[in-house]
Image (cartoon, rainbow, N blue to C red; front, side):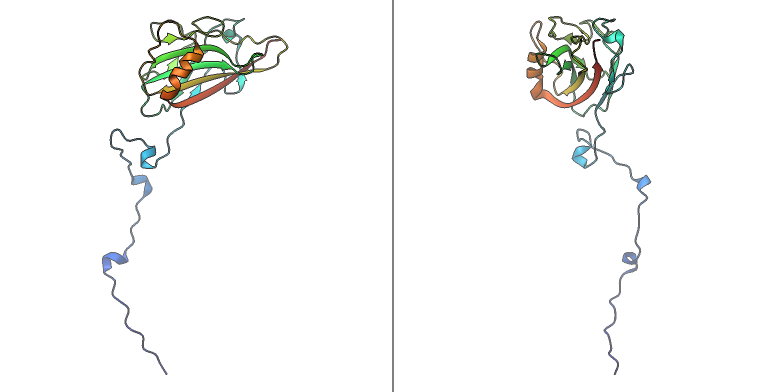
Length: 195
């Protein structure tokens, strides 16, 4: 005995063909004001680096306080959308009495992507008062025999053009004022040990 099956429904020809798009031909266009994250595209990492030393490496003598006491050259890339200025802070969490702040540069224009070696001078940006009591860079100077210290160079992207601090401001106060405006932070760590 044979069973008769009902006829198969007809599928229009246009539905029978599957089309695949070559992913190399897809161009993502983002309307102005929208970030890559809002469109589900991962952002490139905001990074800070120095041609003078790599992350986790020893800070060379020209950049330590007992050496040349020059600020090292720094460069960054992939600043987040919405950044209107940058704040750079250098901190040593290994100091005997806790966090010791060596340098702060603020109101760095968003168009910049580097600070050259020996950067100084209020003509380009403003500097906070460090824990030595100076409104300029002071390099690593850990106590002898205290072991390796880790110096964190932290560059924060801010959503304001200026922090508008009055007069000479300590770095801790700058950080407190900047914190609500931080969009992202890039970190570079250098090490140094006094022998």
